Length: 223
Image (tube, rainbow, N blue to C red; front, side, top):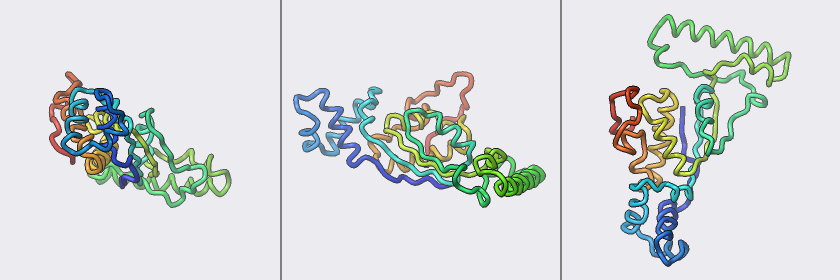
């Protein structure tokens, strides 16, 4: 699995800080952009974020390429509605040589791993058989959730905050959590001021909202 930050809003922190401060200034954002510096940015943007006013970071967007992830992962990912997705098509792309994701819990069990691999080999054998006789869009019905895929994802910074709160949590599904952790790492590199406090609620809010369902293991750093 590979995650790449393809593109993001130029001067995202300068833009969002100026937009935020324009709410409290007699100057428009166009002039504040010229007045911005990192010290002012900490105040102009850091204070609103600390107060929970995240609408100002909707002005910045980030686009990621996620490669070699399972269809099980993307079925969860596309539930985040305030995002744009472009996914590899199984209708038009042959899956004859496609790979699959083997969960660690299965890989650690020798017998389970053997049966899993045998099943995957059988599924792909049947897929190849079917794809020679029927359209690929129908042959794909035999493919498993483990089948790998590529997807391009664009979210604004506020939706990314929400995504990280849900998917960087220890209780999130392991594969999507690994993707979210890497997305957060890349986003922090690109815009450290915007994402310095982003992460699961134990990081972003300093507390867990899960109540009795809490994992009891607050995250202090990315894996």
